[in-house]
Amino acid sequence: MYAIFESGGKQYIASEGVKLDLEKIPEKIGEITSIKKVLLLNNKQKTILGDPILENVFIKVKILGHFKKKKINILKFRRRKNSKRIKGHRQWFTKIKIIKIISNRKNIYGT
Image (cartoon, rainbow, N blue to C red; front, side, top):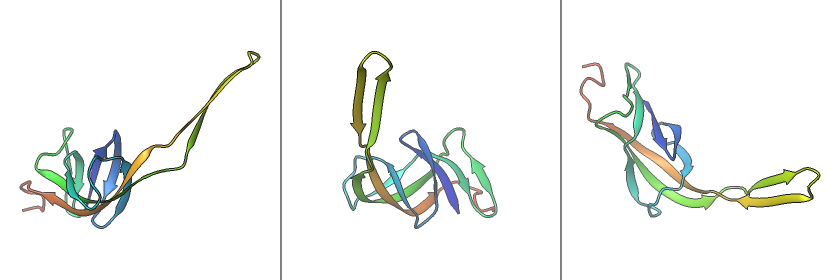
């Protein structure tokens, strides 16, 4: 079973036991939280699409840590004007582990 969810304006594929890097989630390390913006849920028997978000479906995740990725350099350059501006940016990320995909929807397993 897998699900597609949205976090920080990006979409991710989640299966149980997978570790992902998301944009920073304001939770403490070791805390268990849930993601409620699930867009698609797929079982081997059935696929359910949200319109745009599925009701009664959420993903339990454990926060493993917060970190910054490699620095991105931003360069603004104007030719022949002797003008140049260099900036750097390091985005905060959160490493999570998918614990379980929980669905309280009826007829998800073909019954």
